[in-house]
Length: 184
Ligand code: GRF
Image (cartoon, rainbow, N blue to C red):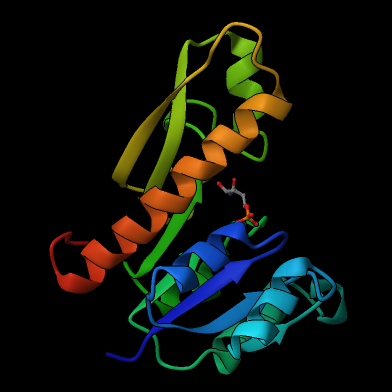
């Protein structure tokens, strides 16, 4: 087995959950060089490629730089990577890229899954792990877990409940994929 590469843009709590679960995370790609996830990777001794897309001629050039930097990987895990992948990344790892989304897809895709579910007034939301394709949060669903929305919940109270479920569901799903129990 060669390992998992994680793509992340921010806090990195899901990156940390994968590492803490003992999964073979061997590389991080981060498009926000000052994001806290970079320090987490450093502390864990995990090699990192940070880039600023603005330093490249276009998205294709930025994605080509990522492809060149990432070591051979069994699986690419997008854990809070706040960009749509273009054809260069999708073609580099066909059917091997998964994403974590903080809502029950196909409801509430996009950047604000937690807030959108609250605003709509659903009573149950949750977490989805899915394959990545060229669409927005549209690939085949691999795993989901529900989170009830309780009376009085706000984004500040709901978000930690969502994240707690993410920290269990993502490592469990990745482990099942690596074991061959969950086919991509
Ligand atoms: C998670 O809620 C994930 O579902 C969303 O971005 C967030 C990343 O959080 N796509 P973290 O950086 O892993 O803490």
